[in-house]
Length: 406
Image (tube, rainbow, N blue to C red; front, side, top):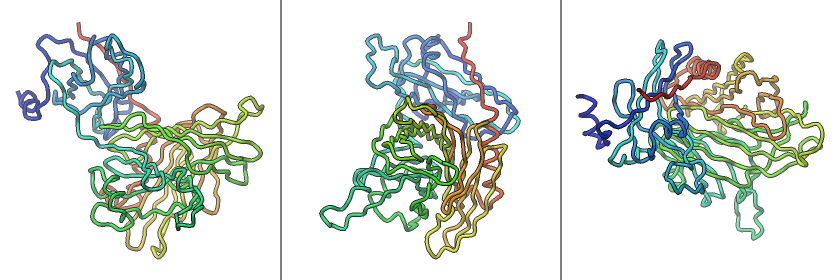
């Protein structure tokens, strides 16, 4: 009765009487605490269990039978779908907070007659042409941006236009859970905290928070600003986008890069899949070393930062904790997918995590930041524990089983 009343109060649709039900069982190895675990069910499995189901006629319920927000990704927006079976759909996504000791959780998915209205989005990404072609993204925890072609274009008319070649990743620190990127770009005063947070991070020539490059053993070779972009999904739970970097010289080779970001609600770290391609692709010797960096000198002038580092080879991670004079403290981190770590290196500006890569094969890593102003981290140990817990989740991912009763 409580679940029924909640559905009615929220204006969410009820499943049709006798409608088929999909049962999704998610096993949690190690019974780890997994706040905001994103559960992905391939739409092909949904379509088999619920023939004719559509993204706007679904109800997803949690272990307590209460309604859950969900998202259906649209991975092939140009796909022809004359039978209306969801050929363009990718995954059905929803989230669950696994408590420590919770070994499994069971969810149900049902087709509904009524329309399910859209859920408020907790993630967002977009190209920002009004600010020299930035690309910006955020969730309910933190925001980022990186820099596009208009920023690096020369000031040929001598108008005083800003010119900068920076392919590192910026951090925007948020105090609030709601989306702020559009508000901050409109106000253009995001270097000052007006109650929602601020841009207190200096990227410059560094890799920023998870920027990449090619490491030759002595020197880091980096791209120019991104050249093109593509948004694949944009909420309410997950945003997916790609940034392409034109080929650049790297230790006697030319290499291009495409970064695919997966940004989920409820997390301080994003998943990044970077694919580097040697040009020409048929040149022998396709292996090379990719470096993912964290900026060592990210504080603004006058902040007198005190930084400590934590490097955990078993986790493939490096984490910084930087206490600043008036801005609070900022944690940043990079974690490699399990088993990829080749080693560490340092430049004057960056701490680098190294991984051996092959041309055309994605390298997966996770990068992000957490600020004391957001209220969830107050000391270095808190941030280190968060990074360690993330690495533990990577080593023991959840498993998803889909069944139709009867």
